[in-house]
Figure: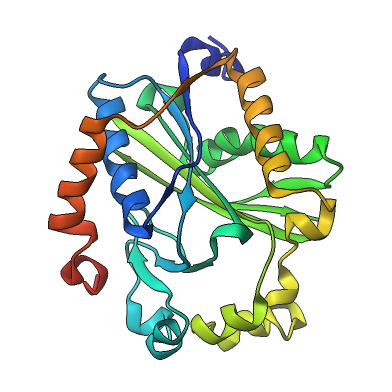
Length: 260
């Protein structure tokens, strides 16, 4: 089997965005990853929905180092920790596109992390290029363009499956982002750039298209890559499992404020 034909070896399901509290998305990532690994769910592409702004930190970061908590409280921004590594992100529901892929480990077998990031992001690059964006993958986990960085991905391989999720910038409230995130001086001065916001190339700025139109193009491109997508939704049982994980893990102060 060729690498590219691996996509069509599975019956892929699609979960469209449903507006939920920030912590629910992180709990669902673990629930759906476990279910795919156990063979209880088909490989799935899920687009996130949100009802509130958040700062999400990577699995191995600390809130103190990454977030100005006073600013976050002032703006009603939730602070969450995700299952995967990587950096902190400032997220506002209408300004972000986030998706998760849950698949058996066989999809990326024999690939290094760098190779798997490139492989799992190919369809996104294709979708963005079809919209006229000069986009490409930049190792290890960035999706970027000649207009600036578009987004970043993170990955986890556990429970017998792979989780690959990415967040793309549709629009950017740069002033608020710089208030809430503790962006280090080394980032601000990277390659002589004095503002972190200038390194970002939001999709709205590059396309003038509505956010939903971009999401639909992404869905169409993924469906072409894998041979079709079956409409699906989070089951009552999966949501109940997510609720329990929120109670015992993702919604606890111990999880959010743990020091790696």
